[in-house]
Structures are given as C-alpha cells and as structure tokens.
Length: 145
Length: 150
Image (cartoon, rainbow over the protein chains, first blue to last red):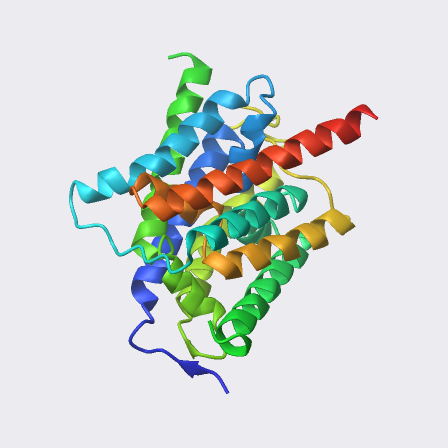
C-alpha cells in the first residue's frame, strides 16, 4: 500500500513549475530548434561541435542564473542535500556517465522525449524511474539509510 | 540582430525559465525528489505532476513542430535548423545508461538540471555533485572518442 505524504505533496506548485519547464522546452524548440535535454546540452560542451557551443553555454548560464533572479523577488526554496561528500561523488559520476550513454536524462527523455512520443524515451524513462525507486528502496528500507 | 546572437539570447531565456520552473516546483531540492522515489515510505507524488505539467505544455508544440517541420523547410522561428532525434531503436547503451543514471539519481536525489540550478544557488554539496557529474560526462566523451577512432 502506498501512503501519500499530504504535508509534503505540493500539487499546484508542481503543476505550475512543470508548466514553466514545458514552456522552456517550447522556447528552445521553436526558437533554437533544439531539444532541451540538460545532459545533452552540458555533456555536448565536451565535443565542441561547430556552432553548437555558444547556445549550449548560454542555456547553462540561464540555468545557473535562475536562483539569483528568483532571490531578487523571493527567498529561495529550501535545497536539502542529505548525501555526504563521497556519496555525492559516486552519484554524480553515475549520473554523468549514465545520462550520456543513455543519450538523455529526466529533461531530454522524460519531458521532451515523452512529448515527442518517442519509444526510446519511454523505455529510458521507465528504466531510470525504476532504478531510482529501487535504489531508494534499498538505501532507505533494506539498508536502513 | 545577427541570427546566431539571437539564438544565444533565446537559449539563455530558455535556461532561465527552465531554472525557475525547477525552483517553483521544488525539484531543485533533492529531498523532495527522494520523497517521490521513496514509494515504500510516505510518498510525495509532486514529481509526477511536474512531469505532467511539463508534458502538458510540451506535447502539443512538439507534435505541431513534428507535423509542420517540412512546411517550415526545417527552420525554427529565428531561422535555426530544427534538429530532432530520429533514432527509434532500443539498444544496450540506452537501457544500461538509463539504469546507471537511475541508480545515481536515487543515491543523491539529483539529476542534471536540478544539480546545476542548486549549484547556481550556491549549495556547496551541489557543486561537488555537479563536478563529479561533469567528470562522468568527460569520461564518456573520452571513451566514445577513443571508440570512434578505432
């Protein structure tokens, strides 16, 4: 049985924030003609393909600048990171390698790919969601976190 | 204004809006993401609604662009080439890579977008994660380049 955490569940801000993310993918698609997949945009910087580096850099700068713009009007929402440094390094390496081998992450496959009704992205999304659920089950409930 | 300059500005705007969306939805917070991935604990379904909101906006436009692309001669509104993925095969790197990504995601609660946004917010642990993630991406680049040259 699944028990919903009604205190933590934030349906309206989740939907509104999600719509903003969707809007961002639409801006990049309609204007730049590109997929807003973060791992592809950032990881693609290593390749330095002609004509592809500039927009990738400014997109990444936009991501980095978001909190400063937010903080100019509001206090920033909490960012709680439980993992210790060694775990962060291991997790970061896995996320970097995995998303590049999979040609996408939560944004590229999960949002853009599913919006394109891509079978590859559906498989990728089911795989990383399944692995995420399983990993948290193991660390929090089997190993006791 | 020169076309490519415009594309730099629109990409910055897209990144900024993406970042604000992650902050507004709570997804820049790993603890909230882990609350979604923890099905066996008390479950926070928020991430599912973030996906629904994003796809609800994205899907009609992606479908429209897919349908009109030839009519637009493959060009975006500011004259950039529209580049959409064409592959449809389910191969090993897609499956194994996604599983590896999912394990890392479950360990720290960070995927690439939120990690970069949290880095922008100045969270030191996010900087560590992002540095390791970039290292992983760099390793992939070196390995795939070596493979390509064999």
